[in-house]
Amino acid sequence: MPIVAQTSKFSTFGRPVLAWGVGLLFFFPIFWMVLTSFKTDADAVKPENLVFFTPTLENYFNMVENYDYWRFARNSIITAVSATIFTLFVSIPAAYSMAFNPSRATKDILMWMLSTKMLPAAAVLYPMIFLAKGIGLYDTHILIITVLSLINLPIAIWMLFTYFKEIPRDIIEAGKMDGVNTWGEIKEILIPLAWGGIASTALLVFIFCWNEAYWTVRLTTIDAATLSKLIEGNRAPEGLFFGRLSAVSTAAVGPIVVLGWFCQKQLVQGLTFGAVK
Amino acid sequence: MSDRKLPRLLQTPAVLLLLIWMLIPLGMTLYFSFIRYVLNNLRRPEWTSPSLSNWRGFGNYEFVLKSKDFVLAIQNSLFIVCSILFLTVILGILIAVLINKAFPGQGIVRVLLISPFFVMPAVNAVLWINMILDPVLGLQGIAVAGVNDMLDSLRQMPVLGSFFSLWPEFEPISFRATQTSAIAVIMMVTWQWTPFAVLIFMTSLQSEDQQQKEAAVLDGAGTWSQFRFLTLPHLGRPIAIVVMIQAIFHLSLYAEIEIVSRGNGNKNLPYLIGEFANNNIGAASATGIFAVILANIVAIFLLRMVGKTLME
Image (cartoon, rainbow over all chains, first blue to last red; front, side, top):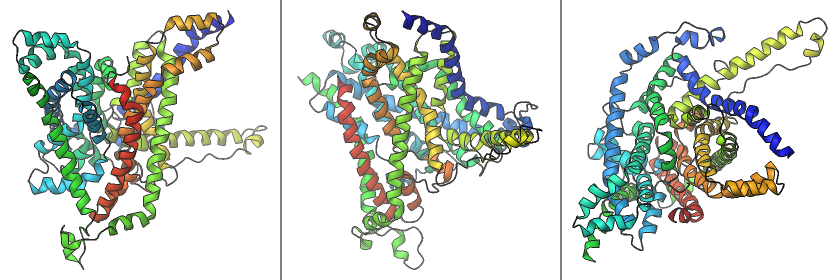
């Protein structure tokens, strides 16, 4: 049994050390960003202040006072939350219909929906700007919410579809016997049963909305500009202002990373479209 | 069957929205790709607004195909996407196998590992290219300078000094340069997406048949052959899913490319479109149509490979 002995030796010592090493390595850039955010811009680039320095909140005060952080943050919250709600509002009925009343076209429709995700956004950017300015929606919340919803719709429908498929059809049918109509079925039977799946879909859509940086940067100027626009505006050329940059970055990704920590288990299932169990 | 009608109709809003979302901008892109349409042109002001009288036929397509950036951008797109897929799958499997068994602090390590996935892509790029990879001010620059200083002081040593003076000075690498910026992009995206692969592979490993493994051990199978003949086949489907989902996201990679090098020698297709779109909307649209065709080829290939298994 030499193999077994060897394995167990590795398990008691090698595995934890290696695993912790990998975990810390992957987390290091984030840690570094947070650490740098407490340094002044001058300290941040001095090798002698790499680890030891006088922590300061200067960058954060500066960010709030001079860069209008809260306006960007508010826009991020408004657009991401509204887009998530709107996406669910459209995708729950669609996924319900596909999961419980499939037609021969359902598979193809689902495939087609996913394939729209692969279209390069850049290919339709100019027409979108043209249209948005034409109907006077450029740089408005409505436009950003619409775009964010549309780009996340395929993923949301797919995820919900895979969750709904797991629910025995009989349960839904039983509702029909009791004289519940379609809306009642969705509201009173489906949503309570698939609550976990709906929650992880909502979470993932929210994260994607929050992190979106192509459309939000190009379809806004000031009024509807989100945190990704703030980052775009603050990336100073060639490594200046590390402290300021880190503070803005930390404030932009912090909420989502923490949210992700709490919900990682649900997210995993969601991300795999329920296809990996 | 009439009670089936309403439930079936419930998917129409989603389908219609996506159809509109696809067809209208795409139709306009198609139209712009066949006309002369530039934003600034003092000599030919009629070209600055879209009109059928500026019809150019396939002229924009020819222009794009002839520009040397186009082939480069396609090569670069594929190089970046393939490298990221390769690295994330390999690293993902290794790390998943490593942390799958219980050890002290497993939960915390999982949390640490997943974190990069939630970072905004723009922040990811800004963070890596400045604070980590910058050749002077970033950690890379500081580390290289530190090593060189150490070598310098070793050279001053009485006897061994002559040995160390044979060593070269180390040069920090500038990741904004033409040849290296793609590497930087691959590095940062791999950092961000490896956690995704790890989580999916871990979920899958947990459902691996343990009895089969024990039987294999009794038959004298070593760790490697267990991995090769039991674990790896078991991971087939998750690997396919990781590849598909990542391909969807990375084909349209943009923020990272722009922030790292402003496309300096490292354009991918989306970036090239953006560059054309600064002035020549016609050429940008033609490039866009090429990008759509490329995306469709990849999509058909991937969906054939993976999509059907998702349905079961």
